Structures are given as C-alpha cells and as structure tokens.
Amino acid sequence: MIHFYELAQLDASQRARLLRRAEVKIDELIEYVRPIVNTIRDRGDAALVEFMERFDHVQVSPERLRVSREEIEQAHERLDKEVYAAIEHAVRNVRTFHQHQMPHEQWFTEVAPGVMAGEKITPISSVGLYVPRGKGAFPSVMYMLATPASIAGVPRIVVCTPPGPDGEVDPASLVAADLCGVHEIYRVGGAQAIAALAYGTESIARVHKITGPGSPYVSAAKRLLYGTVDVGLPAGSSEAIILADESADPELIARDLLIEAEHGPDSSSLLVTTSRELANMVQELLPHKIATLPEPRRTFCYTGLESEKGTGGIVLASNIQEAIDFVNEYAPEHMEVQVREPFAILPSLRNAGEILLGAYAPISLGNYSLGTNAVLPTGGFAHTFSCTSVFDFLKRTGIAYVTEEGYAGLSETTRRLAEFEGFPSHAQSVTNRPARTSHK
Ligand SMILES: NC(=O)c1ccc[n+]([C@@H]2O[C@H](COP(=O)([O-])OP(=O)(O)OC[C@H]3O[C@@H](n4cnc5c(N)ncnc54)[C@H](O)[C@@H]3O)[C@@H](O)[C@H]2O)c1
Ligand SMILES: N[C@H](CO)Cc1c[nH]c[nH+]1
Ligand SMILES: [Zn+2]
View 1 (cartoon, protein in one colour):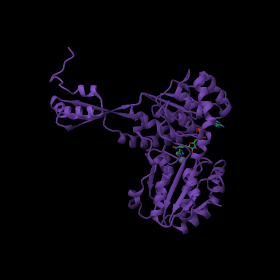
View 2 (cartoon, protein in one colour):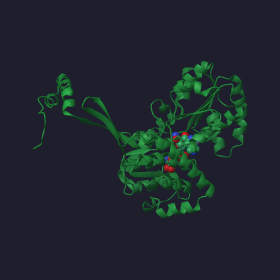
View 3 (tube, helix red, strand yellow):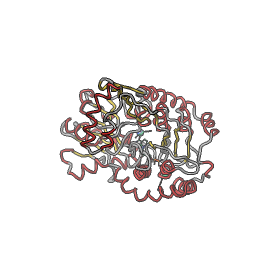
View 4 (tube, protein in one colour):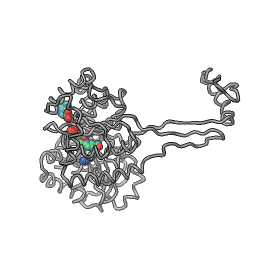
C-alpha cells in the first residue's frame, strides 16, 4: 500500500519524519565515515586503493587512479552514437542556460561623489567534482557540474567518480567530461574520494572546493570536512514533490512520482495534492507501475513509497494554501507543479531547488536536457542553498577607488566610528591625511 498522509491529521512526529527524509541516515554515518577520512589524510594513495578494494571490490594500482588520455579517446570512439548525440544535445542546452547566467566580470557604482565601489569576479582556482556511480552511471551529473565550472573559467577542474565492477570509468561520463573541459579524472568514489580531494594524496593534488551529489557516505564525509575545504551545496539522496490539483492527469502524476523514487531506497518522492480523487487514483496506479520496473529500481520504488522505511508517498492537503505551506517547509530538491494555473501560485513557492511548471515539464527533462541544473540542494537545504550554477565556481571581491574629494566626504565619519569602537590606528589613518600622499 502506497503511503498516504492527510496533512491536517499528521501528528508532530509523523510530520517531522517526513520533513527529515534521508538526512537521518547521514547523521548516523558520521562516526562510521570518520576513520575513512582520517586514514586517507594519514596514508594517502595506499589507503585509497585499500578502501576501493573493500567498498568497490576492484583492484586499482595508484598509477591507474588517474584516467589516461588514451582511455578518454577510446570512450569517444566506442560510445554508442545515439547516446553520444544525446549528450551533445543536452550539453548544448545546459551550456546556453549557464552562459546566460554569467555575471559581468567587474562593476563599479559611484556611491557618493568621488567614491567608486564595486565588485570583481574571479573563478575559484581548483574544484573537485564528485560524480556518483553506486547505483548507476551519471554522465548527466558530469555535464551538470563541469559545464558551469568551465564557463566560470575554473583553471583546474578535477573529477572523482567510482569505477564500475570492471575497474573502468563509465565511458559516457568520460565523453561528457571531455566535452565540458574537465582537466583531470580519477577513478575513486565514496567518502575516500572526498577526503582525497580535501587533503590531497600522492596522486591527487588537493582542491579548494568540492561539489557534486552522492550517497550518504559522500554526504557524511563532506560534513566532516567542512572547515578543511569548501564542500559546496548539500546534494544527497534524490527527492521530489509533485504539487497537483484536480486538473492533473493521474497517469502522468503516477509516472512522474517514480522519477526520483527510482534513484535509491532512500529517495523521497511525494505527491502533495488538494484532490482526494486524484490521490486515490494515483494510489491505485502506482503499485502496478512499480511492479513492471526492472530490479533494482522496483525495490527502490517499493522501499521509498510502500515499505515501513520509506519517506515517499501521497500527502493530501485540505486546501492549496495548506499544500503550499507544507511544500515551502519541506523545501524539496525538485518540484513539479501541475495545477490549473501554475504561474498564479509561482510567487508563493519560496523553497525548492527547481520548480518545473505544467504537464510538459517532467522532472526528467530537468534532470537531463532542458538546460537548468539538476544538481540541487536536498534534505531541506533549499531553504538557504541555491541550484548549482556558475556562482558555485566564482567568487566576488569588493573593489573601490576614492578620489581626494571622495576621501574628504568620508574621513570624519570613519574617524568618529573608529574612535567609538576603540581603534586608534584606524582613526589615525583618517586624521590629517596629507592632500597628496607619496611613498617617496
Ligand atoms: N542531488 C543530486 O543532484 C543527485 C544527482 C544524482 C544522484 N543523486 C543521489 O546521489 C546518490 C548516489 O549514490 P550512489 O550510491 O549511486 O553513488 P556514490 O558514488 O555516491 O556511492 C558509491 C560509493 O560509495 C562507497 N561505498 C559503498 N558501500 C560502502 C560502505 N559500506 N561503506 C563505505 N563506503 C561505501 C563506494 O566507495 C562507492 O564508490 C543517490 O542517493 C542519488 O539519489 C543526487
Ligand atoms: N535526479 C538527480 C538529482 O537528484 C539527477 C539525475 C541524473 N540522472 C538521473 N537523475
Ligand atoms: Zn533523477
């Protein structure tokens, strides 16, 4: 039976459980992951290959951690031509979207006569992109991360991604990386990859920032390494809300609910609706659809939507305002809006990684091809974090130039405030400053 919740009847603990989703698992894994992270810090490559043998069941010598140019060329030659063309098509749209996002390199405004202040943007000098591969290969995650990094102008873009059971990196991901300007690719995954990027090993030079989604092991490692390295937006187990009213087609809603549910047993996929009739129809349709999926996707969807452990299902609201309030509190990673007038409620939707409007924008389009970024904050972090963008790979620096006239207008205010805060040197620097200063 698909989980069914009536918002008005949820008790506090049921509501909290729904809102917490896979985050519970990350908390539990912190102490498990700590020795993995510390061992990489202390023993570098040797520990990397040992953990790979233990968790990925492959033997890779330290010399083969980095994917060679030859392997990348082979991937270009061997990849199925239709998959190749699909990647190129998707990358074009993702590139167009992110090029549009790029801010001006520098701006100034005259905040007062003779006082010019502004900002300059600079790409981060090295970033590590984590592309998961436990429950499937993700060339799409590769281009969602590498495209904005390369448009931002990051001079060193490094990727870590786990090898498959044969010890090889997925060829489609290699092609996507190469098309998007990645500089170094390493076959290593999990918490150990995050630690290697943060601390550096003999083979992998450390980076200034790590970003990219991953399993709860990856998320737990990032949480531990906060403070050692910039760990970017929290992108963990996939989740989605479909917000729908009585105008929605139950068949489409049932299909779309399975999009994010099929990522893993810890995915959370919710229908939030004001229509009891729609809820009942979707509840009836889902078990048949789940039953026709191949393994392991069937078990993933069953676990998330039907089993005791699952955090997905159907949520019935008494009215649209109650539904919107719940969605805003949940702050889903992905959101589909299938109501009669989606643009009318758009201004009230405040917290989500992405909002896809109408019946023709299923989450899968956002995941792959429409141009927006699909690496998004999970676990409620869409309350404060944004979708992945060029801004994840850029930083802003304040800049200013002040003329003699501008200085004259600011010195007294500055002196007074400096004295009030008890900083005599600050005050001295703006007291009787010669009209023209010279270092000679
Ligand atoms: N938010 C997003 O944008 C986004 C995008 C794609 C995927 N996802 C999510 O990312 C996650 C990807 O997870 P995944 O498992 O497929 O790939 P993953 O690459 O994150 O995890 C696999 C790695 O985990 C390590 N590992 C496996 N078992 C372990 C164990 N017992 N102990 C320690 N380490 C172990 C292995 O080293 C392996 O390489 C999914 O939850 C999916 O929903 C999110
Ligand atoms: N839904 C994922 C983000 O949560 C992105 C993705 C890639 N491939 C399939 N889905
Ligand atoms: Zn997906």
